[in-house]
Length: 378
Image (cartoon, rainbow, N blue to C red; front, side, top):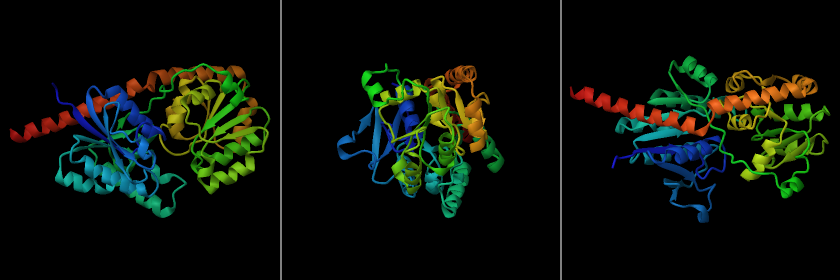
């Protein structure tokens, strides 16, 4: 029996996916590649109560650590994960750069192959203060320098890394076809009374770089499109203040995070327009997921979003611009754009396609190592 390549996935909150893009990526790699690779995933105990901590998930080994996967503790969480994985894995897949702090030691004492997938340009995010931005920028530089392979999920990220560090990257985006189709139920119609009417949809974390206030302000000052906005409003004073300010506006419905996949499917499937306000990062999972539903996209005008949508969506760069777009948008316009989005998603953003790209990367990386070792013996 052929020995499987051991891959440790580091830097996500864990699986089963309950959090965001990296977690969904980890889960989909396991589901699509478990027959060919031996996966291990590090999970934070903060997301999984004691009663929900199995040792394995879909054939993948789960390792739990008592640190948060986000915020300042992510450096400890990722660093400990890297050190532990170096003892058993052939390949360490780092999702984010927080674990870069210990990579010099791993490279010094082992020949483990390191793949780094930076989380967009993390240090540019507005939520970080100056010292944190400084640290994250240096961790990014260290991770890129010591990685055997760098994965970027967006052409704009590839351009940034090449310009900043003179390095080559492998471009692998995200999939968005993991939400299983469901039929609209009477219970959902009762729960979401707006669902059978025209509405715009927005789903994201409530952080400044996602242009939350710009979007809320724009919709509050027009009466053409109702906005359904789903986010973690209670996680910060920033979100709480915006909730109090806009929750009573008749054009806006603010909902707390929704984790039920059936409800998420229905809300996306019946939306007439998707608003994407992210100004930092790479290929954003919520954008790719919306594209799979054939929803016309109105996205914040930055290189990342244009690259993801192949410049075939609609774009805005200010509150005035967004209001103008909403006023002038005709049904024939957004119907055609929605069809383009779905076609692009089916061509570029399916999980089978993405998983196959990762599998090729894993195999090629170890093949290079074997060739290098053979050349040393000649």
